[in-house]
Image (spheres, rainbow, N blue to C red):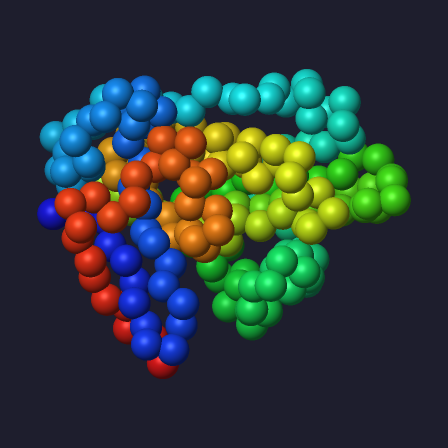
Length: 201
């Protein structure tokens, strides 16, 4: 049985884990416990609508990429550091990217005072077994590009890809400050009050 849990570590702030139930279902008040029975609801998740088109972002000098071939590990680590994420061991980060099920990243298509041409300005990825469940990780947007809808746009595109792959249970961990953003995208927090624990060294 798949479940949405909250990872709790005594010395680390709690981060809720959310499950995607679809924008329509979330707004209609679908009972969250149905997200616990993923394979019974295959094909019933509604993919999120795109709030802004690719063309809109192209006009802003932003391009979305859904493959990892052009990603430089050093540049990704630099993005992580700028948003407050820990820097990852480059070799392990490369392996993590190679084992990622789906990803989306954004790059600047022209030089500006906010970014160099071709610079990575946003990133998100998902791990998955490919059929039953997926978890979204590392959602990050360069600070100078935040509050412009880029993070939401990446989440919409990544979640849509996972739904189209037929994966019925999609989860993510979230900083408390951005939980409302994910709820607007169709995620629900801690359905049925279920909790869990995470092992960390």
